[in-house]
Length: 173
Image (tube, rainbow, N blue to C red; front, side, top):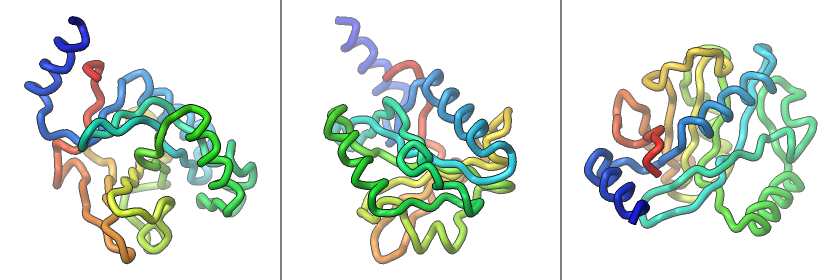
């Protein structure tokens, strides 16, 4: 019964949201991104979770440097093929999917040419989230960059200023 009440409330309060994440999970992800970036370089993670119809539910994160220890050595996030093999293995073991990726930028959360040309997961519908100011607190959710990959190095801007109902941080998952 409890699950149906949560689902009903979520459907009434957030009918059009695409990605859902629990506040404690989101806060932990941002804290880890900030810690790993040391206020000096980008840091990133894959958000693992489960699809529920058109919705994506974030359950946990796998940080790039857990997959490839030298992922941040150039100052930007770079992963090679073995890191992705580890990622897919983790997804199989945990029975989760990559629902998005997230990484930090030093200033504004814009999509750089490198971000546009090198999607972490080059599959239509993949979501990339960019957090400004190396995820220093407080993170203004309205300043996130959120982009949906449509293929052929093209993206749709789903940032909160353009699509305010795309990402929802809520306990009602």
